Length: 332
Image (cartoon, rainbow, N blue to C red; front, side, top):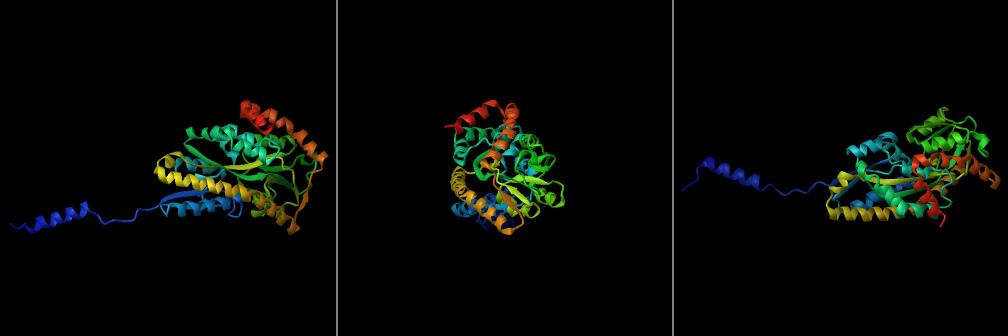
């Protein structure tokens, strides 16, 4: 018995719908946004992670890196991550306080870390792990800490004694601790997004700032700052974070590959951070636009005395237990 023509057509259509042609699955996209230049340690590490992630997943993951605040500025990027507009960030540790995790501001306390070794003891130990876990209720998973070294000061006058800061308008990240730091030195702090800092220095909106040499050089801040002081008074580091819902939704095998890629990238980033800052400082020196000052032991002691009250003042905000735990860890 022959099947009527119309029925045959319907049957063929059903078979076609039931067996669609095989297509390659689209890659999972990770948008990685950050605010600094590609040539900085963070910028280079982001590209390194992209290369490892894409290679090791065989193209199943695509990482899109957006440097220099192309997508979001300082105040916007964390909200974008929580909303899922981007999947990965590496914000400075100061930026977590507005989320209610004020403990991260301990890393902004002046002179709290006597050495890079002491710093790593905190970041890579129980304290660092516990702080990342505090981000989980905010919809954020912390993957790693990246390093950018200790900060220096810049202005259009030599900053050798605390009295030299009197009345200066100094750009800072939005941080109660950094605000207190500048006020302890007699300066007038002004919180600006990183992308706004170089133009603000050129236009005289602010007269000086603090940052690492690599950030200053790649943003050409030194071209409008006649003097740098190698104060090493504070630390600048980052936490690499992802949207928790996105991360938890990845296949376990794929997530393991990305975790290993991040661990290898973190080792790479730590290896290049100090060298990159040394090279940037030397490039600033060679430019001839900026005089670089090294503090004498007496001047360094004066800075420490002036800034010591900041830790006492900020302990209640950060958590005395966190501050004491860091002090104990670095004293070993």
